Amino acid sequence: MGDPARIPLWTAIVALAGLGQAVLLFANAIFVWCYLRETKKLRQAAEEQVNIGQRQVEVSFRPAVVIQHWRSASELAAVNIGSGPAIDVHWSLLNTDLKGTFPYLRQDSDPRNLGGTGWDKKLTNAALKIRPDIAQIECLYRSLSGWRYSSINTYDVGSASFTTMFVDHGPPRKAAEDKQKERG
Image 1: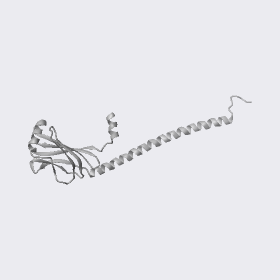
Image 2: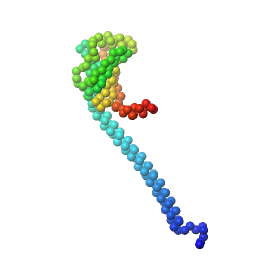
Image 3: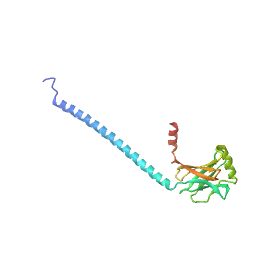
Image 4: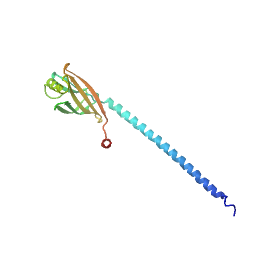
């Protein structure tokens, strides 16, 4: 028969083919992994572009609700000075039970009375609970797309004037995302 240390030619060829196949399989796995990683990057970039586009549209139609004197120092009104309607407007005089709701405030519409008169006294009394010269009315609302906003309207008793700070709370969240964030 022959020398047992010699390997037949066909056995060597099959062994080399198996080794070559393993090398090609490993190279293919690396290629697929790189391809998947790049695909994930492309998906993330596309999602970011969609988010930027949504934000640009939202900025074009953002509501902005302020509180101002209306007719006299004892009457207050909510006004939407933004470029889009404010939906589900909730206002409250902080540190008091005074609050109210408007279903919506259109942009460039007439002011909506907060109700009644005597606001100069109500603001002064509320200011005594925080600082003697400051009272705040918070307004919470959303845009047509569901983006959430608020405004803090700070009343200075000494100058009898309002300054407003706007807060963007961001887009509406899906229920599943909220639950996932609550779980940590």
